[in-house]
Image 1 (cartoon, rainbow, N blue to C red):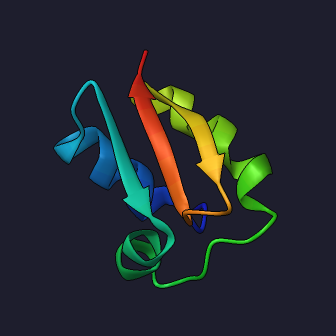
Image 2 (cartoon, rainbow, N blue to C red):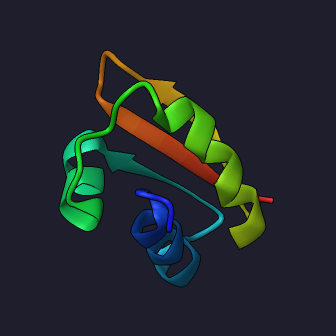
Length: 67
């Protein structure tokens, strides 16, 4: 099981066409801090019908978009 699988399931269940989650939101959902490995794991999200559109290190948010 991927360490972000809980996040992917949450996005599929609760996501709209396009939305943002903060790094803190992601930590609350997954139980782990978002880190550099997220860049590799984000490909898994495609299987759930979404993609990572933008990661803002300044705002500490991730923009997700339905594909």
